Image 1 (cartoon, rainbow, N blue to C red):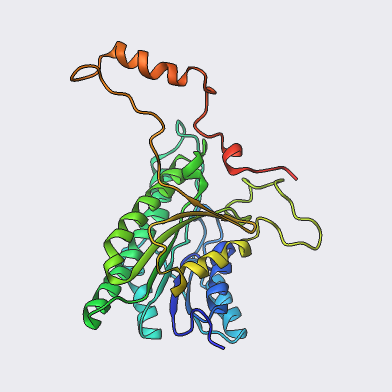
Image 2: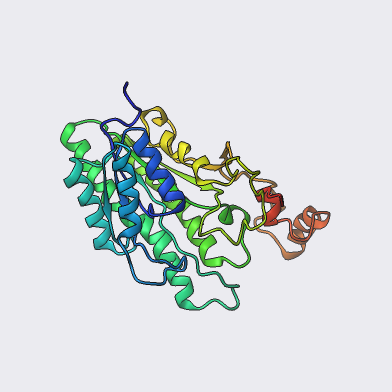
Length: 313
């Protein structure tokens, strides 16, 4: 029986653990040949020596189940290593069809205490890492489309976070990077649609090494049941977005967790005010805008727990 991703090849970054691992296994289960990328550093802040072991273990897990996989130890935030990652997929499988960007680190700190390195390192791995792999995958698909004279099957699934949507007081670097990934995705979706390529972005909720503090004590699973925050709830959406079935899904932001997918609309205008004359005066703005906020909660810009809908279990 034919599988949805038979004959397709995929790259999954940060696939040695957590979400990336679940996504790589799901793509393989659906028939894709996978390049399992992971830099393999033990610290979730990007500390420690790089190791090929996490990527190799997941690749072996895929092969043991009858699938095709190779491991790649590489830092996707390094431009040339990202190029080598895409080249590996093309050289090994003849082409690249799917790119899932998942690699990331955390270096949490309040904005008034954050160092320049803590800012730069998180932006580098998340945002630049997404750009690097996308840049080389996009060039590959554009060249293939020009050579064939028509559209190709190209799928990008990027990973953002509800920290971007809701704000996260102790994660200004992470929230900014995740917001940037949404902008990168929508721009990429517009640029590559003519070649048959789609680019979408997910905001997953999952209990992983990256989020162990965020989700500590929340929605703990009942004994014998799958955790509502297990990465395995996220992976099927990635598999769907990677497939031919999702050809018309492009430039979209989706929240996913625990058997739920929510499609997030682009921002809409909540209120609009016009100047009485050519330009506003201070007093006029005060008369128009201040009443709009007068009866609203003082911190209505999304309390994280409210937006995330988390419940302590």
